[in-house]
Image (cartoon, rainbow, N blue to C red; front, side, top):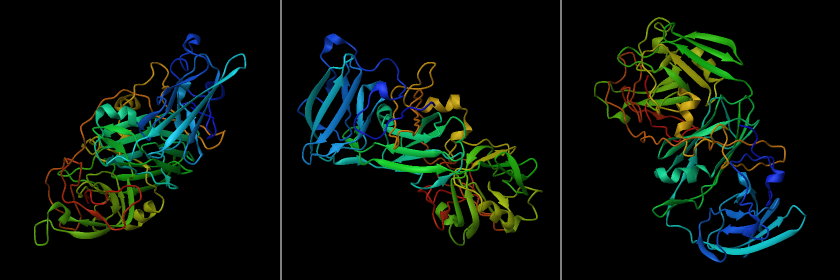
Length: 474
């Protein structure tokens, strides 16, 4: 997407001085509607106003509009930016509850004359029932070129409220790149660029979720701000079950090829486009998480080295000293990609969460939602699960915005596509066997239906995902 904004974080903005993309013209542009820009929401002296409120106005032909929002209790002004089209102004964070605010809207006509309109409103009391939002992309962290932005909600977001939520999710990237949100379920929304991130990209997420009405008395509990970056080199992994080889490329050049053993016929590995979801130097594979306890057939409890998670169903790339003789020759695992210890350590030391992994020729397609499967659909399909329609022909939408930190920053956001609600991922796994006799751990885990063994728990956790107990397949 082209740059959406080149505006510093100040309390004013206008179509003349920004590069926002918009559908249609800013404001009403109707001279008979009033003199200068007028405030349309919140209404003057309104009470019980949500903390997520925006200042809406009609331009009435004004060529420059400035919004100043002031906390009437402490006299502090609130920073914010203009939305595309200039029809509303967005505070950079949720407003304080139980607080009176004053709005001063100053507009300048084409002939240079200025007019100021003022109003006041009071925000609501803190809500009793809230929804929490978490980002799997961590602040200050670095990710591979395939890393999606993954947001999880503590309670389901009704389908009719998802567009309102999405309008409050601002993604800014440097350099600017086209992207889209995709609602994986009622509790999970992802954002990915059209193509893999450009190496070195800086990502800024501002989720203005605090105080946002979600229906049925629910409100967002707080905003989230995340600043992350993409690795300077494009590292990718490809695995071919036909040749039983794993190939690592960096910036398009092959740097290493290594033999693997993959899922056997009964528990095949999935073919598709994945990304590394977690990386743990040591991870506990424990069948008791799938109900297989000590003394039962298939019981195991083993710490696995250099574990790179690919799916919720428990498919990993990991060290497997027990299968070295089969690697490059035969498939014996429960879905994981087995490497010898030296190769596993070499790979682990170079991989980041978000590095793309392509698996092919296993005969078992990757299930949508079994992991961060954002790249397993073409762009034309991916954008259909956004809650905001794409502008016809333009590829951009006037409802998007961003909060740059310097005048030269470029921004991008993803309000670009039609809504096509999906069912929640839920727990879809079937029962299956335990680990191999040679110690190859297996599991089923949360949203996979490929049916292998028991749930695993991480030994040291991961900053990239809050779910350490969602299944392991050896």
